[in-house]
Length: 294
Image (tube, rainbow, N blue to C red):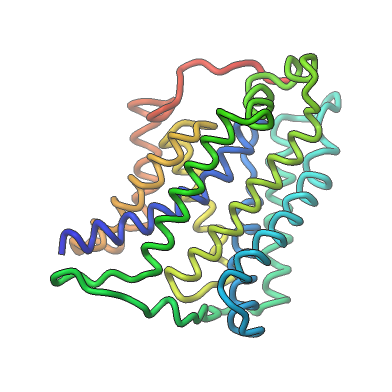
């Protein structure tokens, strides 16, 4: 029983990690919370439904299509909702937040018109494949979700620390003005960051469809809010914090449900926010001071 709950918690936590990484990347560079990320993630999930159910194509094609579609949505979000506000005198610091909220509402309504309002099944033969270890049943999809999350986390950490583009992104996250003076094309870096974060949201959408076997237009809001809870829990803009926060939240929710308090499952994320803000406002891996922003 305990092993089964640990597996379920790690699976759910892995999905939360991938969702939160998208928020973390954008916040780290732009110092804003992208409220449209949840709905972009939701579109990725629906691409999985369309590709695997309607077109009856293999699962790997669903991943490719979801990545492409969500990356395009990320580009348009940056181009239409964020870029026009950047660098303008008199623009409130809340303006980008409000702008991305508008994008999220637009995308949710678009999903209602395109896909319908109810739950849509995400059927793949892979979801039913499993093996047994003792008395514990392990599904291959759980292993796939965990492996993809680990690969994305490791790949992102390597990219940020070892590649020229990753170092440029880190410099932009420290201070956009200084990074620009050092020769970094900050406009292109911002666009690439939003596209990368959105593409990761598309991957997370497919993983959620595989884990829960259904998707709906409202899922972006619930997972988006939990993504925000995770980056606050781990530390705003901190990649390691997003990883730790996602796994902690996934395990906490799973054990709450397992021990009979399922009605409090969704409250766990926000209880965690309140506790962290009181005890350690900067988050688990956050720092008490922040660098300047250009």
